[in-house]
Length: 519
Image (tube, rainbow, N blue to C red; front, top):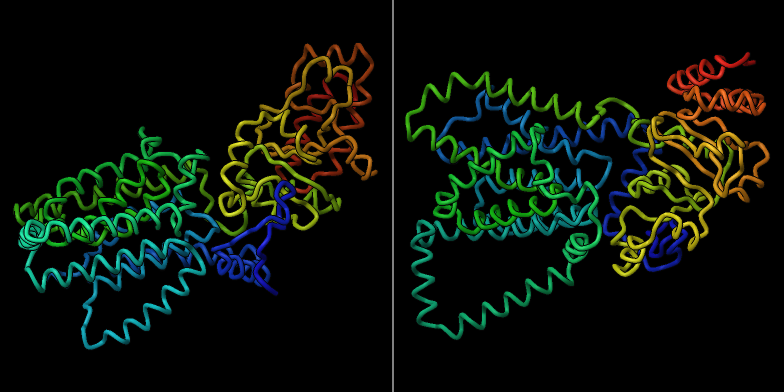
């Protein structure tokens, strides 16, 4: 066994150089699936979530204890739980970034604890092992390294200068005295940062900003609405603005890091979780100071229950709006589970294109090596920017003309599954034939590909929207094509495996039965 170094999943870029910086997670999660299946995924998700919440709660506790305050109360603990889950919810998936959040939360917890000089070599060894493991799973270790450097810088600053204001005054005095040396050092640091951003570990992250604009990379302002996610997080930003002066005075380096990470969600909401993790302990600390300084005892006590009720309601509302499934198994609504079952049952093989790019990853997981996908979901690891821009410039018809596509998967509600009237009434063949559909997904096969699988029959008239039209169905009866519909609904019955599929079959059968008997 070895980590592949060329693309073996897609048919558009097969054999090209492929560098998987998350290979540790790929190995780990494949073992989870092989030995535990859906239950393993369920446990993975909940155990990691529990670890994130526990580490962040621990970080808040360490920060408060270090400041001489009491540990988080039960009410505050529930508030933290609801708020953390609400923010993380938009990024919960069986993907490596979830483990990245766990590592980052653990690091933030450790950085809130004392750093003892006599234990420096032990801490160095532990850090090397920790970051080595982290780097195998996710690239967010870069943010962790910056957090370590800034925290150590702040601890040294407090020991040497007392606070950030004295430090800045001394730095300005030194800058005036050694002007050219400061310019040279600053230029070198700026050059190094540029190299890291555009040629180092963060280069492929930034390259996403200028290529793909899918939901995962939408700006935080995309959520500008009464959506619970935005309604709860915007006050958090307002608190950051309120406390930013205090933060810079006591923790200027780490505060600057928090400020930078706080800006990133305005380019992509996926960074909101990183912002929460790195900022939560100090935000809770300064919020407590703010309330205590103003002796707002009533504000601290009475609204605690109300705050928890609001956060719990926001979490529940966000869960409903995002169709979040917290149970065991893979959601058939969000993933083409039954469609992939159909592919497996019939032993289909060839090149597959999904109109929703993110679902190529599911077919890589379920149907490889028989099925080769058009687009690897980790696009910037596999393809150069020129390829992605070329893809984005093509229409759907140009894609199927330019590339040898055997299967087309559409993420489509039943209300959108229809056919042109003339083609429906004539039961006319087409270049890509409908061979499977359920309430959420449809599979089209190229006519030449269908010929290789005698058991597969195309649906040329069994389109839910068309058969629900009385006008069209009367014309079907008039043309004498009702037997074709009867044969197709009988064949669809053989594909039914799940209750939802049975429900759809019953509805379509009832519609056809209005115009004549159905076997």
